[in-house]
Figure 1 (spheres, one colour):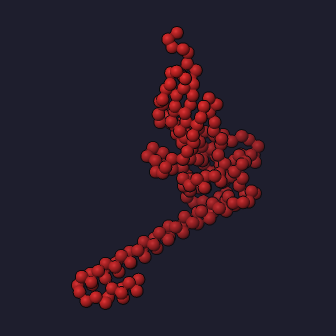
Figure 2 (cartoon, helix red, strand yellow):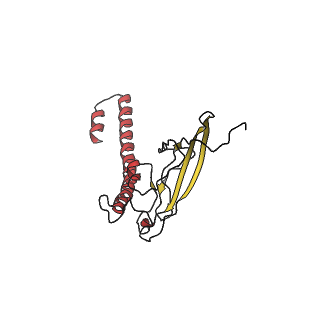
Figure 3 (tube, one colour):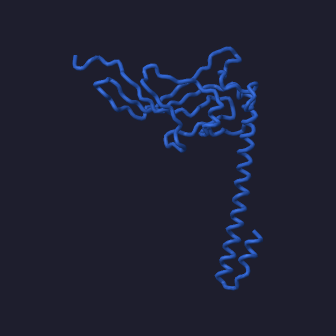
Length: 190
């Protein structure tokens, strides 16, 4: 900041003085902006460090993504599913198949996060973070093919999934696009 002011201060015209003033103001604004971002980044880094401790990457004693959330209690994990159909189309009467694009949301109680120190939700739009979490496997028995993908954030009709600070129903990002095949339709006309 001081070097920039000295470099500009050699000029003697009013335009140069105005330019010097603009450089100093922009430099101060930049430093102030970095300070604010630095504070916000330190809060985010603090939460991410807590999350790393919770997962203990490489240590399977704390959190194992292969184990269901309620395995320690010996009970099944109840998964609630919401399905929002986006489009229903490409109906082929010859092969009796069709295509469905839908959003699939799953919720369950993650009991292993009961005694965590997280103070705010963690955004789960990061696929690297999502791969460390347990997720129920979804399949459609009558599907010829299916394609699961994450939405590009921000999505207008889908709030970003987050890891809640308390053990409440958990929402992984799984809005898929699924082509589903033959419905059981009687021949028409009879």
